[in-house]
Every structure is written in structure tokens, then in C-alpha cells.
Amino acid sequence: MSGRSLVLIGLGILLLLILLGYLLVVGPLLGRLSDRAEERDAKEAQVAQLQAQVQDLERVRDNSGELGQRILELNKRVPSEPEIPTFVVQLQQIAGAAGVTQVRIEPGTPGAPPQGGPYSVVPITMTFEGTYEGLRDFLLRCNDLVRLVTINSVAYEPIIVDAGEEDLATGVEPILNVEIEAEIYFQPEGDGGGAAPISPEATTGATETTTVTEETTVAQ
Image (cartoon, rainbow, N blue to C red; front, side, top):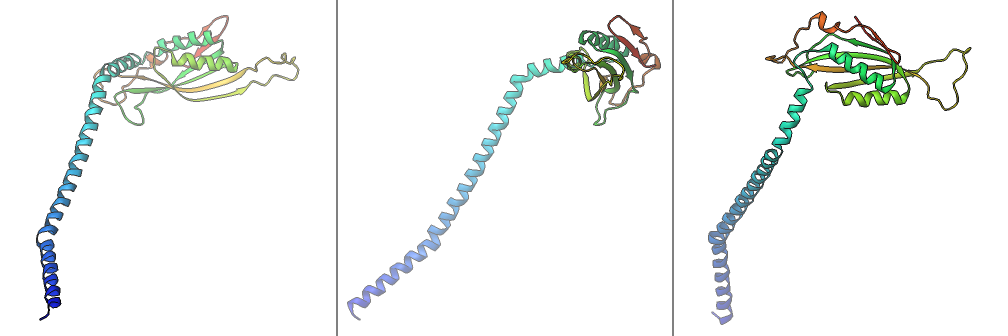
């Protein structure tokens, strides 16, 4: 056998040994390394998730005082009784301050909130006459009331002046007839989430009031 043949046989044997070594040693080792790398990535992702949760908890802890204060303030704006007469007086005051007139306030029947919750909802319909600026001022003052008020809808239209009356001076704002649908809330003490009954006297305790600047009527 020539030397060249021996060299070729030796190279073949060497390649076979390298292949067997890869299959028996290097391949499984690389597989284990890949599995360990995947485990490491999974643990790093878990650690990152835990760190994010810790950060969220720290933010909640840092803001707990502020959140508690906001919840306390909100509870103060939701009384334990309907207190309709008191609310009517507050509306009369802001209506006078906003310069609107012919105010009519009609409380509805209390009921549970559509989404559920440990409080009762009282629908309120308000109508009055005033300019657009007066309407805007009235809505802003509603937001500043001690009682929490939710405005659901606002509809208005200009009051048509009779043809025989003199036209208003150019630039004067038209008078609007306004209707507002709103809600107020109360949370009976010890209530489990349903709407509490309300006596008729609670919704009709305010009487008709007339002043120089406004006429306020509470619907009976």
C-alpha cells in the first residue's frame, strides 16, 4: 500500500473520530448549553417582571397617602342621605351667581347605578333661561359644588322673540332655554350595594322660591 493511500486512510479515520466526537460529546454539550441559555433567559424575564411589580407596589405605596386623601374627599361629596333640599339650595345659589333665571329643578326616583356599586343615584332634571356665558358659568360652578354632580347631557335652544318686539341691540347674546340632565349620589350607611328607599318628603322638602334675579321652582 502506498504512502498516499495510508495518508488518505489516516485522514478518513481522523474525520470519523471527529464526527463521532461531535455526535457523542460536542453535540449533547451544545444542546445542554442551549437549554441553559433558554433557562437563563426565562429567569431574566421573570426577574424583570418581578422588578416591574416591585416598582408598581412602590409607586402605590408612595401614592397611598394622596389616594387616601382623594378617597376621603370623594366620600365627603357623597353623603349618607339624599339631602335633596340642601342640594336644591346649592343650585339656587349657583344659578343666581351665574345670572340664569326661571330655574326649575326636578328630582327623579333614586335607583342603583347601572354598573353596580355601594351607592344610590338620584337623577336630576334642571331647566333655566340664560345666555351661553351664563350656561357655561353654571356648569363650572356645578363642578365646584360640595356635592358630587355628574352632568349627563346639556340641551339648549335660543328663545324666539315675537315679531312685534323690538330686536335686541347688535352683539347682545341671545337668551337660551336650557335643559340639563344630571345625577347626584348618596351612600346609605351599612348599605350592601343596592339602592336605598327614599321618602317622598326627602324629594319635596324645598318650596318655590322667588327673588328679584331669579325664579326657582322645585317640581313636586
